[in-house]
Image (tube, rainbow, N blue to C red):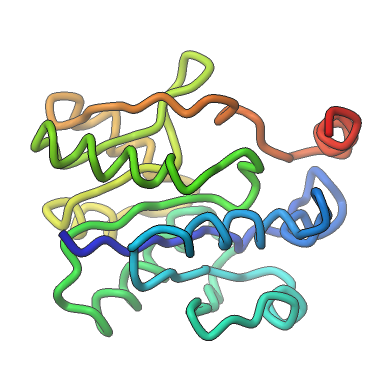
Length: 196
């Protein structure tokens, strides 16, 4: 199974008031943390979707193993970033069987989280495998190519969660410890730093 990873990193961190993707955690940016774990997998390609502050973020994360896609419509919401990443991917890699959608601010993500999604897909044959944490399901989430068209039709602030709700019969989950910890506000970030 050929699986690609799309990391969504286009938002302008409005609630934080500064560029979330560049926040430092244990000596690297939040985005670099996610990229590094993605690079430890066998997944290829790895695409990072940028929008707000794209030039600054790209300059700090140059890596020949990672492709950057600029989502010009990032302000319209997460759907446009999923569409930008996936459409670029399909154009260049027609043989991709599945994708994993990840976000730039789940600081506790590890390579094993990506691997668990793939293994669960192979084991169950289900076409959507989501991460489960804190009584919810979400990213990172794996979609087989059966859902690429559906993903490409997402609009506005709809993330992929809408699809998880639509097709519960085709969905399995894997546990992601600390998956609920993401950074949306200065308080979240200060709490994270105080814990390290």
